[in-house]
Amino acid sequence: MKKIQMVDLGGQYQEIKEQVNNSIEKILESSAFINGPEVHGFQKELEEYLDIKYVIPCANGTDALQIAMMGLGLKPGDEVITADFTFAATVEVIALLQLTPVLVDVDRETFNIDIEAVKKAITPKTKAIVPVHLFGQCADMDAIMDLAKEHNLYVIEDNAQAIGAKYLSKSGKKQMAGTIGHIGATSFFPSKNLGCYGDGGAIFTNDDKLAHTIRGIVNHGMYERYHHDVVGVNSRLDSIQAAVLRAKLPKLDGYCEARRTAARKYSNAFAGQQHIIVPKTVNNCDGICDTCDCHVFHQYTLRITNGKRDDLVTFLNDAGIPCGVYYPIPLHKQKAYLDERYDDNDFPVTNLLVKEVVSLPMHTELDDEQIDYITKKVIEFVNAK
Ligand SMILES: *Cc1c(COP(=O)(O)O)cnc(C)c1O
Image (cartoon, rainbow, N blue to C red):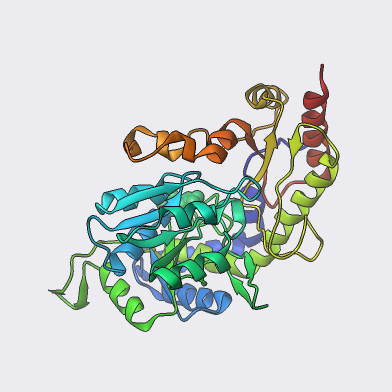
C-alpha cells in the first residue's frame, strides 16, 4: 500500500508537470513575474469558470477577506457576524481592521453558521455577515441572503474551502460557491482544493463599483499611477502561482469529483456504525448521493460520539494514518478573541464539535486499498471494548 498522506499533491503535479514547468520556464525567460499575462489569463479563466463578472487576484485568502471588508468601507465599531467554528483568519481580519467580531454558534449537522444564532446577534451596528463554507459545503445562503436584505447587511463568503462547490438555491438556480454574496474571498494555499505552489488568493464580485474600488485597494490605493486615493495594501498573485493555477483550473471539477468519490466510499463503509456520525450533505439533496455536486470535501470530517476522539487520533497515527482535528478550540475561547460579551452557553454546538471532530485523509489521489485500510482501522477502534 502507498504511504497514506493527509494531503498528497505529488500525484497531481505529475499530471500537469509538463505544462507547469514550461509555463514557469517562459516566465523566467520573460521576467514578467508580477502582473504578467499568466495572471490576467488566470483571472479571465476563473471569471468564466465561476460565471462571475470580476475576479481580483491577491496574495492569499486572509488578504482576500481583509480587502473585501476594506472594499465595503466598513469602519471601526461596525459589527461583523461570523462563525465560532472556523479557521482564525476569518475573525483575525475583522479584529485587525478594528471592526467588532461577533462570533456565533454553528449547525451540528453541517458545521456551518447557525441561522437562528445569526438572527439573535443582529444589532443596529451590524454591517456584515461572513459565512464560511466549512469543509467544502455552502452555508445556508438562501437564509443568509434573506436576512441580509431584511437588515441591509453585506455578505462576504469565506470560500477558502469550497471553490468548485455548487449551491442550489430554493429558486432552483445553481450558483458557484463564493458568487452568491456581495463579495466572495478564496485562498489558493497549496492544500486547498485549487491550490498553487506558494500563497495565493482571490476576491470575486459582480458589482462594478466594488470591483473598481478593490482593484485600487490591492495596489496601494492607486487608481492612477502614483495617485493614492485611499489607504490600500500590497497584495498580488504572482505569475508563477497563476501559471500553476491555470494548469489546475481545467481539472478542478475532476478533483472535486475524486474527493466526492472518496467521501462516498468512506461514508458507505461507516454506515450503521455506532459512535460515528458521517458528514451530511444538504443542498436540497439528502445524504451523499451520486449526482450531488454541492460538497467538495475540502475535509472529510467525522464526529466520534463515544468521547474517545483523542484516543482514536493516537490509534490512527500509530497505524500510519495521519488525521487532523479541525478545529480543536472554539474561536470565542482563543486568547486573542476573548470578549466579555460572549456567554459560553451560547456556543453549545461548537463546544461539542471541538471534542468530537476528526478529519480523515482527503485528497485526489486516495486509492481503494488506502480507504479500506483507513475505514477498517476506524471501525476496529470504535468497536473495541
Ligand atoms: C485557508 C483559509 C483561510 C486563509 O487562507 P490563506 O490563503 O492561508 O490566507 C481563510 N479562511 C478559511 C476558512 C480557510 O480555510
